[in-house]
Length: 75
Image (cartoon, rainbow, N blue to C red; front, side, top):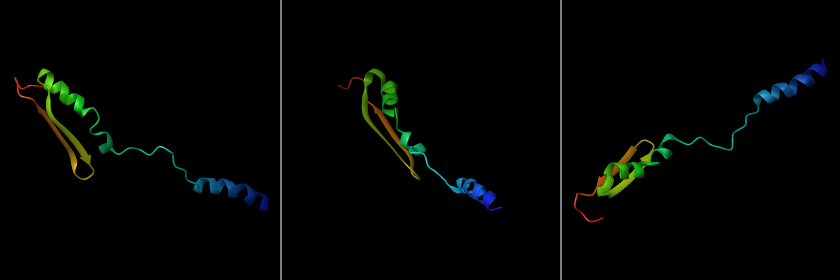
C-alpha cells in the first residue's frame, strides 16, 4: 500500500503544478496602431500627410487621426 501511495503522490502533484510560458499574450490594444501610419499615407496619396496620431488604451478605445494636406499645399 505504501508503494502505491509513493507512486501516486508524484502523479497527483504533477497535476497541481502550473507553469507559464515566457511569452505573455499581447493585449489587443498594443497592436491597434500598427501599420496605421502607412495606411494613412496610402489614403492621402500624392497630397501627403498633414498630421497623424494614434493611441490605444484599455478602457479608452482607439483614437486615430489622419489628416491629409490640401491640394496645392507644399510638402
